[in-house]
Length: 217
Ligand SMILES: *Cc1c(COP(=O)(O)O)cnc(C)c1O
Image (tube, rainbow, N blue to C red; front, side, top):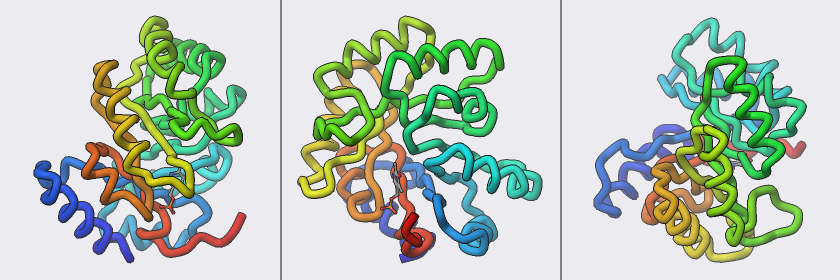
């Protein structure tokens, strides 16, 4: 695949789902990709990128931002509380809000910096012990907690278990978002973004389909 074919597949999935063209945002996940591949994607006009480590993003993106001022950067990986201030300065969205200590730290950071990124609560719909995210049974309570401390959460994010049918997880995420009045759904990666669009994804996080395979970490 490539940026162009990913966009074509997104547009086709939007059409099949009866959704408006370009209603789904493509977050091009550039973690571990070469500068050359990222520069080529910027050159073709794409401006929305995702990273999963604060340190890596801090090294890579400021120079690109000097060249192209309108870049939007999304944090899609787990966020440590000691990296919150750096993350708030760098990112336009954080997809991985998943615990009270992080929510508290984000709320304080946003107050003191006077700048709030778009925020998504990550839900561990598969209840996998090694994975980040709030368990689905605790999601409503956690979302209420965030809104209660004036944390402007507008959506949910999920990474379905690798070996399960993703549609079930996308449907569950949408259900939780609907009953909590949240409009954004960050779901779908290279292997399943078309299914995610059928289930209402507003943001798909696509890496290897856009850039090619990543080298192993
Ligand atoms: C790496 C990553 C992606 C992109 O994965 P691909 O399979 O390469 O599309 C999406 N979301 C998160 C949270 C990631 O860490």
